[in-house]
Image 1 (cartoon, rainbow, N blue to C red):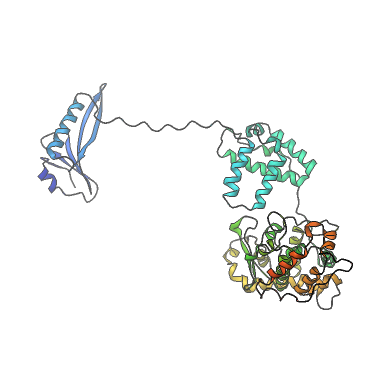
Image 2: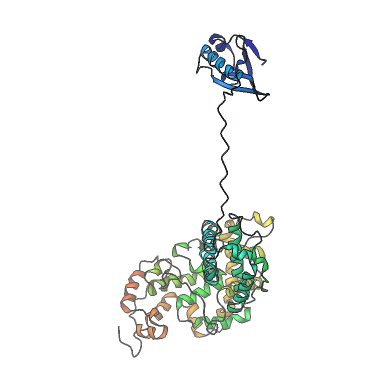
Length: 484
């Protein structure tokens, strides 16, 4: 709409329509430089005039008031006063606020302890990294760099040779793999600190390191190695540890994740075991389909666990008397058990190839990321209850078939363990005198008779679909031992 010129009275202002688009002006015929600016929703009294300062002309435009806040007469009077000030060389506009000053850059250089603490909270804990990952970083930073914790990071950044020498020393004292791992942990903490402290040298001091050569361990067993390994496994006296190693072989699960399985993570109706905190944290949680052999292993655990550990056995699949209530240390002497831990995970993957399980199925069973775009369209949960369980069953049969399958001759201890009911194994366990158990396995493994009797009552409360009924036969006394 074109600009207008008319007397700016209250009556005339009421009749002025709002602009359909943009803005237009209605200039006053009585006072030069006084006008009303009309937009799509507002009408404002305005003034505009030239201000001369030091011989230089400046155009001054400012708002007087909103139409409705003042009458046209009062607005004209205020505008006349403002225009007079401008004519006298005075700028009536309020002074502009100075832009907020930027804070002075911080000159504080964090120590290694401070940088590690911030990295732990903001990068590991906030992102849900697993407890095992946090423990690895903690071990590297607080043990292998203990004497550096109160050093400013700039000292190490300015003298990369310090880190190179420490890498050489750790390689000599702790081994090349641990040295490389410690340097990777330091590198991550330094890079994280550099994001918030630009005063640190931009180049990470880990660039000065001559890294030790590393290669993946080839510790998997072949089919021919399994009979000797199973014979060793059957001789392990602790039934909880024995079942742990077997379930590791049958599931291919990482040991830290398996040790943290709770009873509530078992869905035996759907034949699933939930891994709530695998490598990568809770965001990577997944389900493992259970084969028949894996179910039998779990039934034995649920039968025997609450008897040996009445409290923790009700919570954890692998209970113990550790402070956490579950099994914490899974390592065995190599002379006792030749392969354990990630050796069994490698065996699981190696023998799956021999059992002709497909590459994609193994990625899904082991919770590995699927490479490429096309496999990314696979919805894992839709294959869990039929296809993946069939693949798991096929692999379990392959692993056990050559040991205790039909027509195979296995050691008596192994046959009794894998082919007997959980009730028979429990009776064997009950038959041992507590003093004999104490002499064999030490005081931590001794079962006092009153505890065993109390645990028997607790066993009755377990769901009947999980285990067979407790034996009612009187407990046998070990020959030569009558103490209770």
